[in-house]
Amino acid sequence: MAERRLRLGKGPARGDQVGPNPTDRAKNGTKRGVPTEAGGGPVAVALAPANRHDSLVLQDILEAVVVEPPNPLEHEQHLCLDKAFDGAPSDATARVFGYEPHVRRIGEEKLDGAGESRHPARRWVVERTISWLNRCRAILTRWDKKAENYLGMLQLACALLWYRRLHQLGT
Image (cartoon, helix red, strand yellow):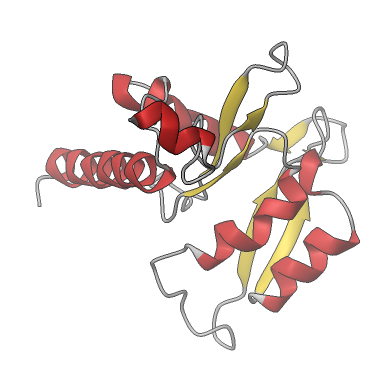
């Protein structure tokens, strides 16, 4: 019965939001967009096929943010991005959402007068959060066929991260 349904085109054969991964022998994969706050807590999650460029996913990521930013007239909102978001479309998208984009390439850090790095790059904050999410086995390997189910698991894992952070703070 399920094979017949798939042959008639009434459902996805291998799941939605899946595409050939350009870095892994074109195996099907999913890209997770996870913006974080300064301490590494996730504020949103967005899904896209693995073959979609990061700059095209930025609008979906910023629309998924669940925390309202403070008044932009009082506090300017900064958005630290990596090299994949370098370009006019990504800058325009970030500015439409009220963020000041900062794109630093690998090896490019703020240097003082003596050539020493003053402030380390902030890319590791997001990478650390994604590593925390990868501790959940159901997220590391996508077993869900529907994107909604996988997105729900990611959101549950993000809520669990926040719970653990607040529990460690003792509040």
